[in-house]
Image (cartoon, rainbow, N blue to C red; front, side, top):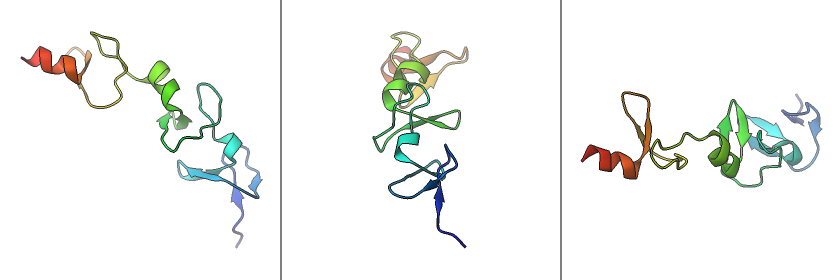
Length: 96
């Protein structure tokens, strides 16, 4: 049995440093944002369509937006019966 790690991106052996994320091993240069194609160096990232996405790209391109202020909804938010999304600030104001 071999302990050789295989990169999920290129399917080649990993001989030195590696990243373990999303249930797989990656060469550091192959663990990159699916939007901007830049390596992800932060420990926190998002997953979009089973691929990693850095926080800035997620906020700017993927995150749902508040119907009223267009702010990226990164945490908890509310959805009404018309599938409109509201940040917590607006959800609380609408409820009162």
